[in-house]
Image 1: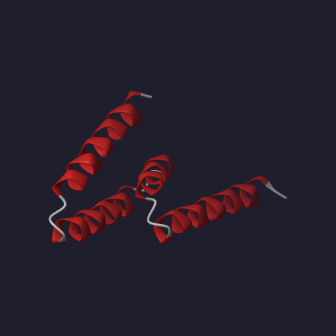
Image 2 (image 1 turned 90 degrees about the vertical axis):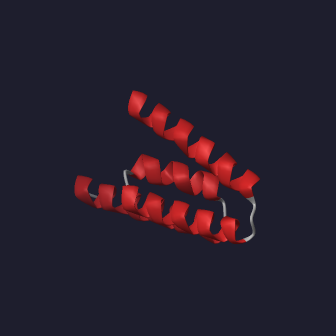
Length: 80
């Protein structure tokens, strides 16, 4: 396998992994993987969907836990 084919294969696997996390509603790992894959638009979509879903149930505790989790992850990501 050539180098570019290997990269493509790796990216496809990571995309599948992200889809699996979203299917399982494992938002923590989905958010981390979006940060790792440098996909800000997808990260925004996931966060928007999660917040919209949780806010419809007025679950503010979940909303703030997601907010602080993402804030810490982004700070750590940019410190690298």
